[in-house]
Length: 401
Image 1 (spheres, one colour):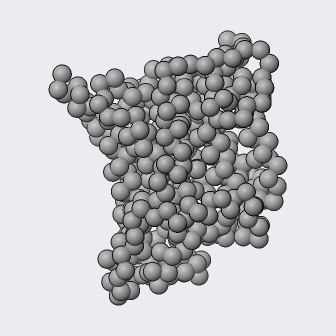
Image 2 (cartoon, helix red, strand yellow):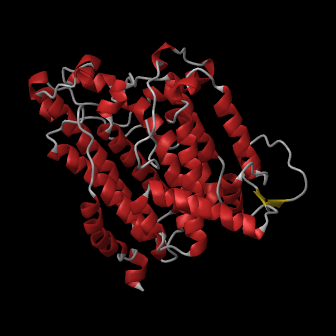
Image 3 (cartoon, helix red, strand yellow):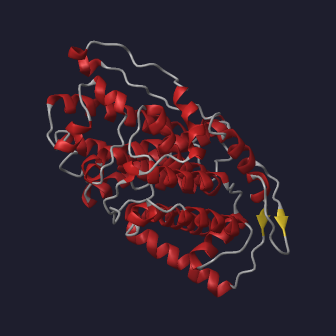
């Protein structure tokens, strides 16, 4: 499953992930499944269209999001010098290191990141051009790291990754080197410099790697809490990484936690949309990113997903899934207008484009088993003026001044 930052289809290979035993260290997440914010209404199967699915997943306190917000919202900047050492906590490892990077080398590093972003995330890239130079470079660097992380399990070497955990372990060690000013290559160098310029915490990056680990051993999700955890790891984390770079409007009266939650919800909405768009492609790989208990409530099972046959029951199921995905975009809207002025347009653009994928699924008569919903370039361009108008909204504090 491609992460939210992978806007172009990934080069994936079929992998028999279901045969891999669950690592013991992952068992600690089993308790998260018991955390239910809202219950599913018990309604007779004949009224499937009335089924109320869980709208929220795991409480953000369980994900320690507030710790990330606190560290990234701190005005204090911690710098270290000399040889790097082993840090035992996220807080210690997130202390800033002033990297010693050659100017020309750094410029080339960011240019390489820009090229990748422009190639694989064209619409979003256009939006980043509206940011200040330092912010757009930082977003390019974060984008490239997220894409490279995703490609470890969804790229050409997917088969190897499904049976070898060493690569992800080494990738996490390499992440720690990035945070202590020891980049391995040009792309790492851009992120190392970005970390020195913005208050980025390492936990969202580590959590994303954990999401890739989930992809190597977990081909099914029993309920929405399990799926929400996965969506947080591979996409909600992107929102948490981005807020310090995007910046919060100085006129905003909203709390930092509220804005970070909205950014996280945007990532969740994007990933749920990815999942609904790619149901057929994922099925060919033997993977079903749909809550098993909810499939059963609509009288469906994996067999229906693999069959490629769109039935009335499938359509009703998809309507409910789309409604939930849209609810996360609605939650994200509450924070988008509180970002810094120069960052709002690209965020609104990404939100509107991704949400419109859900419209395309509906236009395809809910056939995401055989068709991949796609928003054409023309429609994307038409959304730019709407995104711009939404971006002009000022936080309430400014309106009162």
